[in-house]
Length: 481
Ligand code: NAP
Image (cartoon, rainbow, N blue to C red; front, top):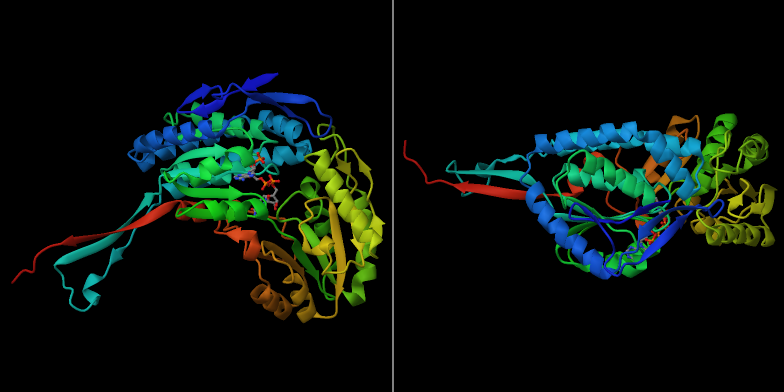
């Protein structure tokens, strides 16, 4: 069994209190590895190291940062299979999903490396300001913010780590990463790629441990200039309340709506929803959770969806042919099952699924769901969709907008006017027409409205949010000729 320390100041070090903990498979409880258990004192040491690392990295030219990042990308490409196996074992997602995720790592780093080499400023037409002449020149330069704290969730343990650390490093920042307690091993494997690529000591630090224990020490520290957080809305709200004056990106929860209009291609909608509602056992912030169907076609839609959902193969994440593995823990599986049971006992109809075996839940469809019930309004984060009906487009949009969230939305229609209205009126950071929201190109801006968060990820947006604009004015003296 591999044992891992904390990465602080370029060294692998034990936690100061010497504590460690096991990382176990959510599918069968096997021990996958051991990590150090950091406490607040370790968090402070990691920030100390990042401050020193920033001093070196801020003076490292963009072309040198670019070279190190592209080497890290190459190493990530070479380690896809190794990383995928590790991810499936510690996270419980199927190997096919882990390979897909690990396979995007190198590309995310390359996209970020490019954006980090594009820190342009602009010239300011100062003479257009009354009283200012040609004796002054003004322009802006873009600089890294400094120390970035990155806190990531369990559900995409490589992807969501990389969407933070790659743009942060590319732009010249130093990072302290705190990965999810359930999935630290993938994050450590990702960090190793950057170390092996030659990242200077202290530029990337990784501390493993409990967020509720060490989170405040990371978030409150005034030397930290930016927090990049992905996780639940409740933790995001806490972070916002204690962070003080620093930049914040919060990528939070959702209850994603998909509208299926009566003029839609029902077969195509069902195919897409049978993926979008169940990938990663529904543990995706852009999962298709609420399916809002025109009332005239709901029967045909359910007939098309049911066999596709029943064809999803669930079980041992490492076994051949399995599409969807386990949920992250027994507690989470029990919570999801309790939500399904509560919805059905309050009048909704179980169409298929709803069976639990340990941490595995069979893909579930629940119809006749009251769109204002907790099963629709609250984030489920499990392998089930809630089907409700809408009278017309206006009603469908009203229901889509009826939750506290607004991250991703999908819409199926063959009517251009309906799509345009939905694009304009759905309160959501991303809107997909003729696909569900469970689709992401890593370069696109990505982030939520309302309680789904603040700010955008995607390499260009993240580099933007992890840098500051400095305005520079050169004062000459007026000349005569
Ligand atoms: P979570 O419980 O909020 O945890 C996320 C991270 O925050 C973990 O590293 C966690 O550490 C840490 N944390 C916990 N308490 C903290 C505190 N007081 N201060 C600072 N950090 C703290 O979320 P999760 O269960 O891992 O992930 C699921 C949630 O993430 C869902 O709500 C999902 O929608 C959301 N998510 C959003 C996006 C997006 O892009 N909008 C993407 C993916 C996931 P521990 O693991 O040690 O507790």
